[in-house]
Structure formats: structure tokens, C-alpha cells
Image 1 (cartoon, rainbow, N blue to C red):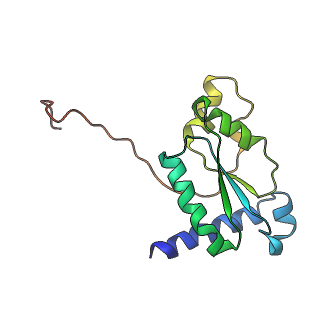
Image 2 (image 1 turned 90 degrees about the vertical axis):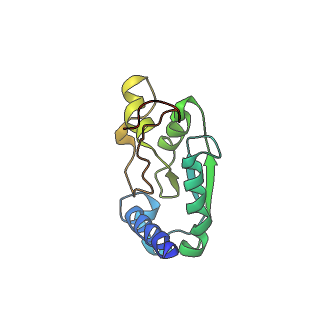
Image 3 (image 1 turned 45 degrees about the horizontal axis):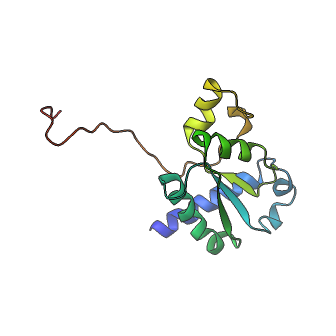
Length: 142
């Protein structure tokens, strides 16, 4: 079941990319992809975003016939990797494993060379809801 779900994610992602006007991929959808795809991760290796990216990358060759190469571009609260992804050639061969903070909040707080409009959403890969926790011996329980 999990393998089928990942297959669906890849199929939808590639269809959206190939018909989204993303340069070379939109011009020749039958040839896409014909080379490895870069997946930019703006956080340090070993974190949740990196692990999700590597899970996707490990399945890409089997489902789309091309490897997906994870590139970690950490630093600056993810602004370095996000700026790097925003400056990449829009040819469908560079994807960015985005989270909401660097894309929507960072440009509102500091000067960065990108805006929220620099990116086109393709698919939601995961969900990370915030939770409240406290020490185990804290008096409150609810």
C-alpha cells in the first residue's frame, strides 16, 4: 500500500511539472525526465525535511526511470537553500523540498533574493502539526 501511495505521488508530481510550463519539461513531455532530477533541501542533513526528501529520492529511479539527487543547502534559517532553488533554471529538473517558513515568512522579515511567488507548489509530501509538550512532572495534565 505504501509503495502504491509513493507511486501516486511521483506520477502526480511529474505530470504537474511536465504540463506546468516549466521550460524544457513542458516542451517535450514524452521525453521527460531524461536526466537526473535535483532535489534541493534547505535544512541540515538528518532532519525531517532531509529524511522525507531521501525517502522520495530512493524511489524515484524505480518509478520515473531517473535518479533523484538530494542536494543539502543548509544555512541562514533555510534562506540559503531557498535562494539557491529560486535561482535555479526552471526546466523541471530542479525541485525544492519547501516548508512554509522559508518560503512565506522569511521574505516578510528579512531581505532575501526571492519571494513567495518565486515558487510553484507541486504536491504536499507530508504534514508536521505543532504540538505542546511539558515536563513529565509538571502539575498540568490538560
